[in-house]
Figure 1: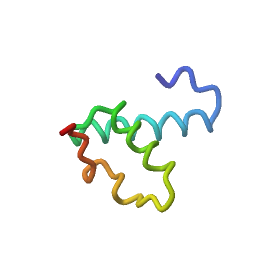
Figure 2: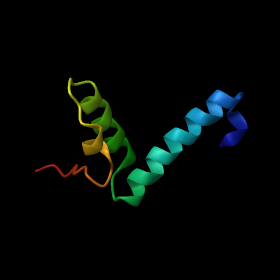
Figure 3: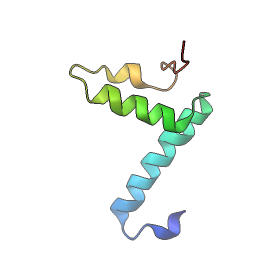
Figure 4: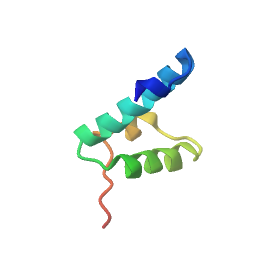
Length: 62
């Protein structure tokens, strides 16, 4: 909802988040689980950013 972005930086942040969410959906991932996975991986040292792309992530719980 773009009406609630009070400045340019807020609009850019919203656009990035919406892009992440929609890309996760397009790749068959649950957006919440995907973002949670990314945040967990980004907090570890030597995180490989390429492995966090939604088409490389497998969130199935075995």
